[in-house]
Length: 64
Image 1 (cartoon, rainbow, N blue to C red):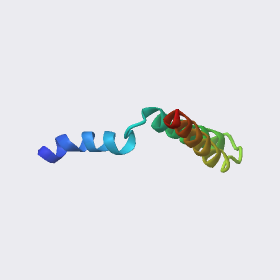
Image 2: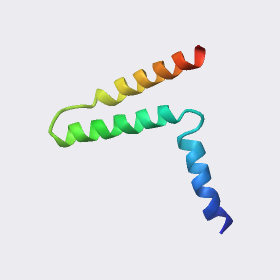
Image 3: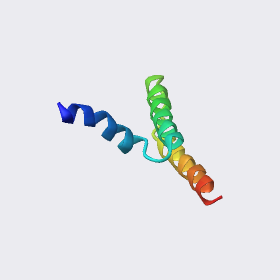
């Protein structure tokens, strides 16, 4: 039972970590890529581009 209570805390810490905005950006990028693929658009390039943009934004915020 203790493991069931610890699982949500672990998942939050693992997925969100210290920067919730970065986690939201990655989930949004995955959703946008999936939606584009479902619409028949070849969008393999969208996810790496979005992750790089999110990483650059996160680094800029961290270095200020």
